[in-house]
Length: 376
Ligand SMILES: Cc1cc2nc3c(=O)[nH]c(=O)nc-3n(C[C@H](O)[C@H](O)[C@H](O)COP(=O)(O)OP(=O)(O)OC[C@H]3O[C@@H](n4cnc5c(N)ncnc54)[C@H](O)[C@@H]3O)c2cc1C
Image (cartoon, rainbow, N blue to C red; front, side, top):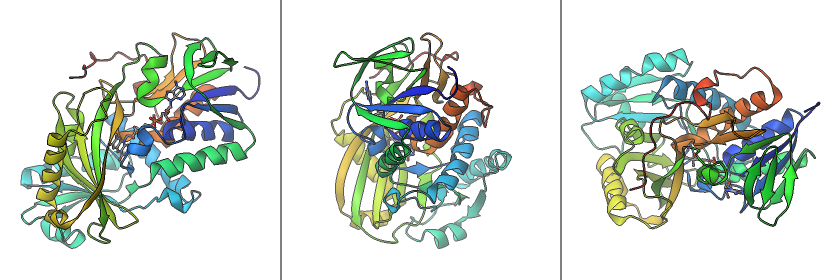
């Protein structure tokens, strides 16, 4: 690989498009291969919360770095990307939860994430529509929300406008050392190949520990001002962390349109697109329990999407030693929108042999991993 590398990026979700743009800006020549259209995979099904999640030190390190990079990127994005820095309120139902929330402050401070615990009075000033009797919240003002599929399109266009990125609509059938075989029989070669195919990544890299973790979302008609922050129950972390039974958690988001985006559910049922009415009902009951005003709101659409989940809850980012020239950027579960910026930085640093912005070791794709949960 003399001079600037030629790189193939497979998948134009937010992770692939962010990585393609990062590579182009670092001087590489990129072919971005997408079987359908930019942002049409999990990226188009996501909530778009850009969040400093702190389930583990490595997760928080990547989220905090990624969130900082989102802050630098946001001003250059078109308004269709709808990046709004509304902040997150992690809602504490009782004093024990509020204490647990306070326990997260030191970790945030270590990563320069501004956060504070607010009492019930302050919480109801910030969000008057929440049900009475809550204890308070953890307020993280620097978190944001965005509209991911529009950003994936904008990044694709920007990379193409550089003259160093070609977008190819094709399906990759198989990988070979420094080469990809397309479903039309063609073979393309490159110095490096980045697999950013989301939940489909194991189809190309057998043995990659990623399973689809299904989620439902509901979007309402327009009620501007009903909520002002991303509202998440503190119990959400438990729902996201536990890999077994189906779960729901209160998680709602204000959209720039005045709509309320309502989540969230998790279940391991493979790539089954059917609405699970029972789970959806439980999710909506959870939402109206925390936010009774939602009972007056009409649901316009419901959809499902698939989070690319790994057994240890961390993404797979880095070289895949089993196939020469292959790099992985996948497995971000419910944080792929947030972590797309940091993932791009790690992949660019790896391929160009630069110092990574944070410790990359916890994300190495061939790290030891707990046994994979199976779709139930
Ligand atoms: C309900 C729900 C809510 C979520 N909310 C959030 C949130 O609030 N915040 C957050 O950070 N994350 C959230 N996520 C997670 C986020 O959506 C994913 O982690 C992220 O979109 C993964 O992006 P990706 O680019 O890796 O994959 P994708 O967006 O799935 O992109 C992969 C692309 O690869 C293409 N592809 C696949 N196979 C091939 C092939 N063989 N050849 C060519 N192309 C191929 C696909 O067509 C697709 O376009 C949510 C997910 C769900 C389901």
